[in-house]
Amino acid sequence: MTTADTFTTGEAPKDRWGRYKISDPATGKERGYTRVTTIAKVLDDSSSLADWKTRMAITGIVQRADLLAQASTALDDRSKLNKIANDAIEAAGAYSRANLGTALHSITQQLDLGMKPQILAGLQSDIETYVASIAAWDFGMRKEWIEVLLINDEFEYAGTADRIVTTRDGKICIFDLKTGTDLSYSFGSIAVQLAMYANADWMYNWKTGERTPMPAIDKTVGIIC
Image (tube, rainbow, N blue to C red; front, side, top):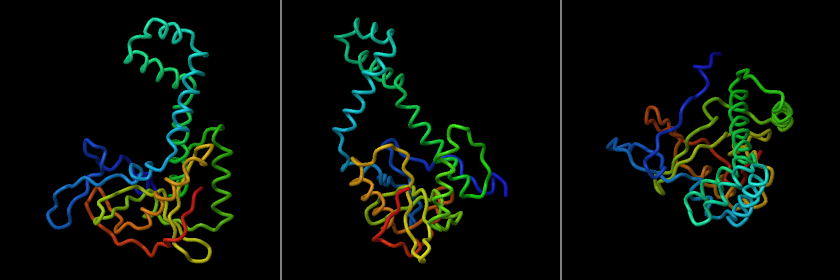
């Protein structure tokens, strides 16, 4: 089993508004379908995100004397202060956590495709826990249901589901990976996200424009890993 045979590279194309480009089955003309995550995040508690960013900015400023010095000379320049704040958030390691989450997604994807990716020591325990959990719950994986783009033509939305899995009792469910440390402020948006995936019309191959009928998804249960 080779990398080229199994591992999908690249992302589905999007328009200038960040919407997925989906071909109309009748005309072949591309239309912009709103991303599932764009719709779902409306229910997020944005105040908690703002508080988190504030804490990260303060942490970064404390750690970087040069940023504090820059800020002291730019108190009346909004654009400079915004850049300094963003640099401080990065200095606090906020973006490195997101990068680790992306890496974990990629590694688990490769594992579920039957590949043997290189795993750094710092990620080993997370990956071992993931593999053990999948085995303990008897989740079934199919190659064509991993990182699959799902679309709904009636409401013109699209989103990439991490997995569609079969459970030990034969149900077919949406399965979504989350790498954040605290999901308590996001359960509303996560529920919407999984429900929209479950109610999609088609699995969509963005490279060919081909639509494939959805399997018989259980619309009452979604799995968060």
